[in-house]
Length: 368
Image 1 (cartoon, rainbow, N blue to C red):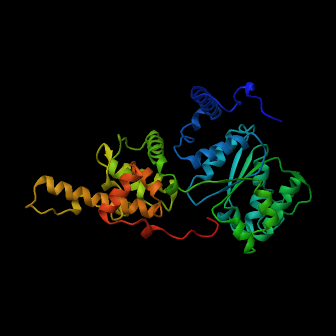
Image 2: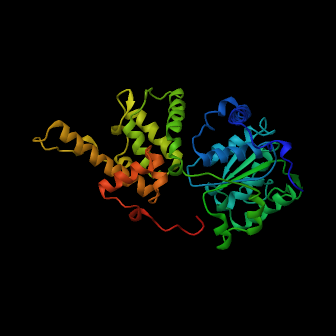
Image 3: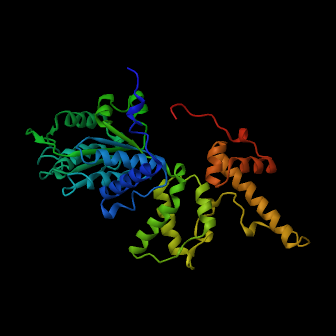
């Protein structure tokens, strides 16, 4: 059927003003969804984290099982609580279990409870976390650490939504919303035979992968502000902020411990810092790597101040660009964006300092 030119523009051909109005309305509705106490948690300048929070908005009101994945310290526990407190179970218990911290012979009792006399030392009946969390949410962290026998029992619960206490015979309804988390690759664990495929599929109904801090460095100023505010409300010494050179060093640091490491470093720095601003001296030296500081320079006293300043700036630029290129595996567009300059400016500086993108490219790992 031929299109009729008199039908007017298609609905998605909106004027720029209309696009802006719709975007502002969507932002307003999204902000209204989040409870006041969590608005700082969901602040982000990172597109990957925006997608994470968008998924949480969609799944939180449901009873759907969620699987949170990501490295240790990325905030899986915080996001699990965010899901619970924005669900229709928010007024009911949120129970967290670290599956990797419980001795193997006690995991089933911890999760499902036990009857008196069911094993040596069971001197009284004990309720498990599935019962304690009734009507609420159960967060199973480090789910990959479960033994094969416990995996079988958990699979049965997720299939039938009933369980029995250890040593018991009565079926008990599992009225909980399960949120699981893992810092391991559970797909690989399934291939290795360490984790059951059928349990993985039961848990992986709604997966949410959380990026590591090194991939969301644009959020560092927000995270620093939020963490400092929280620490100072809890009684930590007050400061006016963090020195710019510290923030720049943070952006180049690899953050193996992710947000948890950032929290620990800031808490320590608040204790060590004598001034009103957190300076490099309040942080471990390894945070700054080979980043030069003023104390690293021994300028020739025969130089003019202008010449000494020019050499200092050149050394700083060279090291800074090397670190950015290395972190971004030689990607020019991403490096320029993080440096706040154009790709043309970056090419010019790279030529000036003899830097080549090929030297920083690394082969992608399978599945990345």
